[in-house]
Image 1: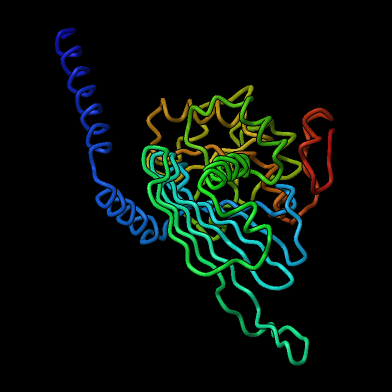
Image 2: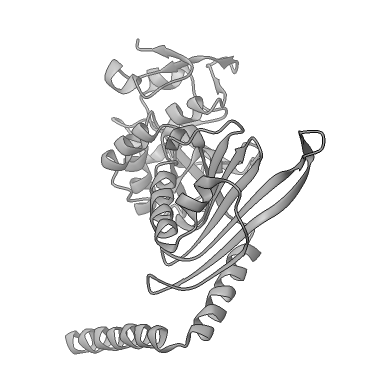
Length: 326
C-alpha cells in the first residue's frame, strides 16, 4: 500500500510538471487562444455568487459613484468588475482569474458627448474613447492591445499598464475576499474565529423565498425567544441533542445559525458526522442577517427589531436592530 501511494504521488508530480512545461512551451498565439477560451467559459456561466464592495469602502471617491463586484464559483473568484462614474463619462475594468491567477484584463473608458458649440454635455449620448486588453500567462504580460486614446489623466497615469493591472487584480481580490459580510472588520474577526470546517453560506446568497430551507437556531433558548429567523427550529448549543432533529430527513437543505457563526459551525460539524448531507453554516449568522435588513420574529410570530446580542463584547458586531442582553 505504501508503495502504491508513493507511485501515485510520483505520477501526480509528473503530470503537474508536464502541465507547467506545456504552458511554458506554448507559442504566444496558442496562449492567447487558451486565454480567450477561458474568458468565454467564464462569461458563458451565469450561476455565480456575487459580492459587492462600494467605492467608498476601498477609499475610491467619485462624483457619480464607484463599485467593485466579484463573481464567485465555489468560493473561487472568477471575475472582478470595477466601475467608476465620472462627471464626463464612465470607466470600468474587468479582471479574469484562473486558478486564482490573473490571466486577462479588459478596460474601457467612455465619455459623454460634449457639444462645443453650446458648451454643454449630452448625458444621453456616450462614445467609447479607449479600450485596452491585456493577456497574461505564467504571471507575465504576453500581449497588450489598445484602441483609441483615453481622456481622463488618471487612466493614462494609473491604469494603462500591465504591472498596475496585476497589482489591482490582487488588491481587488483582497477587498472582495472580505466582502462576505458588510463589515470588513467583522469578516476579519470571523476569519480568525471560525475553523471554516463546514460549508459556509453568505446571507446574500440565501434565497428568502426558498421554502425547502430548514433553519436551525444553535443559540440558547432565551436568545431564540427574543427573536429568530421565521420558521427556525431551536436546537440549542450547550445542551444540543441530536434527537431534536428526528423529524428532519438527512437529505434536507439545512442552514444553521447562531449569533456570529461559531456555535452553529460546531453544531453543523455534528450534523455532518451524523450523515446529514446538505448542511451549511450561515456566515455571520443572525447578526449579519439583521445587519442586512432581513426580518426576525418573536415567539408570537411578529416581526421585531429586538435581537439578543449575547453580551456587549459580541454585541458590537450587531449594527442594526435593537440589542437585548437579558
